[in-house]
Image (cartoon, rainbow, N blue to C red):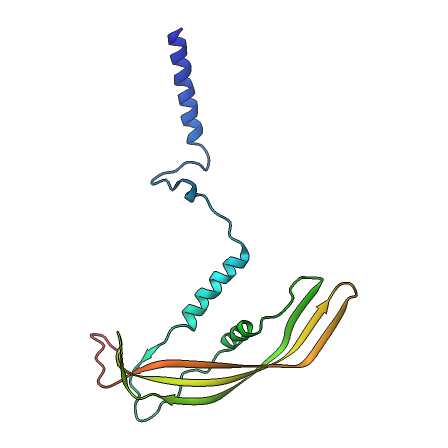
Length: 189
């Protein structure tokens, strides 16, 4: 009887080991336990993370440029349309957003960018950078658009406001190094 019991135990062990090595549950290397399974993320959170990464990469950093030469201190590029529309969405988000009930859109967008001020601060020492001058550029961005509001219930109707406009002020700041700049071997300055 003990030989039959041990044979059944060995057969059960072989079947269990074969079942464990078949399919998606096979893990080679370190096992993360429950953290090894994918966790679904809502599109809302994913879009927020992507927007934060995009804005940090493109707009939240301060560039450090070479010294100002011969009194020419024109600012870098004016704000892009993408930057202006993102600033407008932060300042005045579009209300509504329930399809077939109430939605609001901005159509026929036209952007006018006016420089307000462009000046350079006197040199000072910035920690981790050294002697530098801060260059300020201020812009007034006027956004003209058609605001289209669609209401779907209880009576469907659409309102078109063709004379909508918003004003967004955007500041661009960057640093210019001061004096003889030796950034090390292979520098382009």
